Length: 237
Figure 1 (cartoon, rainbow, N blue to C red):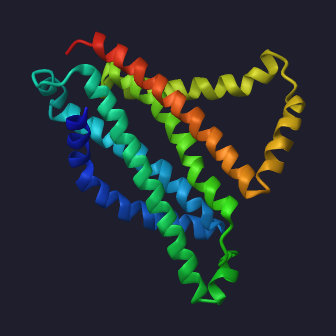
Figure 2: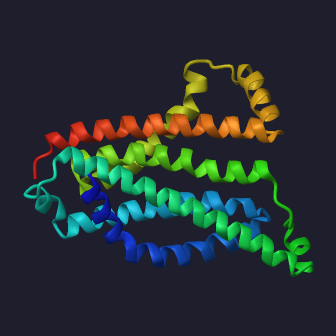
């Protein structure tokens, strides 16, 4: 698995540098325009891993690396597990980069007293906001990759891209229509939402929420990896 991780990271190294610069500039501009610098981390934490995942997968298929790996001393399980691990490393890098960009914007705004007020920014940092902004992309990208990667493991990049948009659309429609179909009373979720809101008012509560999100995301990601291993084992090239 280590060889697979190193192979993936070496492959995306060039693209990572380019996209890191491009996406950092874009998300900083978007966050300043929105008046919320804490959006830098979620934007960067979702955009970079998802984009690099498709770049890596497309590179594999275009250069027939998938077939080549089958003759190497790498099991199909190692290929999938290494791919999931390498994308997790890319996610971690994106979050760290987003936090660094956020701190740089805050530091720069402190030297330009008129700029923060002009764009509705705050030169002070909130611990809760920082924690939540770093954890949000973990949950989002883990769910997105957990849905996408099994489809690619089973059908390949070219075929899977036909199904991924449809799959996400179906999920959204089911989520929207579930209230009507099952007559759900969304008001019953208010006590839970109020509890979460009260927890977010303290640093300790925010850490607790962050821990829960990380745990759930890790379980989903691991389950997706296990599913991808089974699907990839049945795939014919």
